[in-house]
Image 1 (cartoon, rainbow, N blue to C red):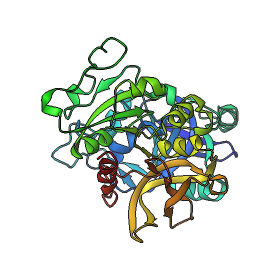
Image 2: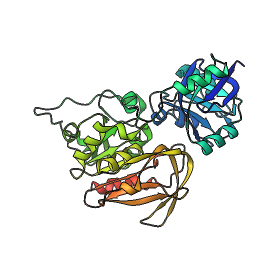
Image 3: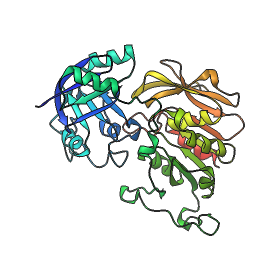
Length: 381
C-alpha cells in the first residue's frame, strides 16, 4: 500500500496507508461514533469541507451499493479509518469502499491509531487538517494545515444546494424531475388528481438527505424541493401546506439570505426544520449559534423530549448549536441533549413552527424520532 499522512494544525502528524483517491485535501477533522451506515454518512452533504474519522475499528466490510446513498455524490474532503476492509461480505454489495472513494475523488487514510486521533480531537476540539498521499514531509504538511481555510465563516450551503427546483418521487431515477411551469402571475398549477389528498410541502434544500424526502412522502406529503437560496415569495408561490428546512453543512451565522427567507415565512405557513434548518429557525427568531468543541456525530446520542419525558436515541451530525442564553421568549426548548445539555429542539409559542437538531430520518440509524414527521403532518392538518 502507498503511504499517506494526516497533519493537524496543532503540529500532530499521523502516517498510514493511502486508499481511495490519491491527492492532497484540507478540511476540519471530526469524528463519527457510528458502527454502521458508513455509506449513508459518506453521501451526507452536511460533511462538505470536512475530513471525517470513523471510531469503529473496521469500515467497509459490507461494501457499497446503489441503494444506501443519501445524495447525488460524496461531499466530504477526506475519510479516515483504522482498517479499511478490502472484502465486501454482504450480498447487496456492488463494489468495495476503496473503489467507491476513488471514483468519487475522496482521499482516504487507513492504518492510523484512530483512538489517539479522536482523543486529541475531544480534548483540544475539532481542528483543521490535511490528508495527503503526495506530500509526506511533516513540516510541509503542518504548514498546509495551518494555512488551510477554516470551517467557520464559510458559506458551504451554496456548494451543495441544488441549482434547480424539482418534485420528489420515490424512485431515484425521478429525483431530478423538473417542476411544471408556473401559470400567469407566478402561481404553480394544482397537483394531479392522484395527489389531491396529500399535503404539499416545500422543502428548502440546504444539502438535504434523500431519506428526509422519503419520510415526508411516507407521511402523506407531496414534496417540492427548492434550492436553499429561494426567497419567501418563491416558496409561497407554490401555495404549500407546510415548509421544511433541511440539514446542510457549515456555519449557520453566515447564511443571512437563508435566515431572511425563514424569517419572512414564520407565521405564514407551518414549518419544521432539521439540523441546519433548526439553527436557521432559531436565528430567524433572534437567537444566536455557537461552535461546539467537537460536535455531535454518531447514531447513539441520547435526547430527552421535555414535553413527554421520553428519551430517544438519535442520529446526529452537527458542529454548531443554538445559544440558549440568546433564545427569544417566543421559542421554548422541547428537546435536550443528555450528554452535554445543549438544545436539541425548539417550538414557537405563537406560530406553527418547530425544529430539532438531530436526524429523525436516520438511515442507517435509530428510528426513535421518526414520529416527528407525523407531528409535522398534523401541524398541516
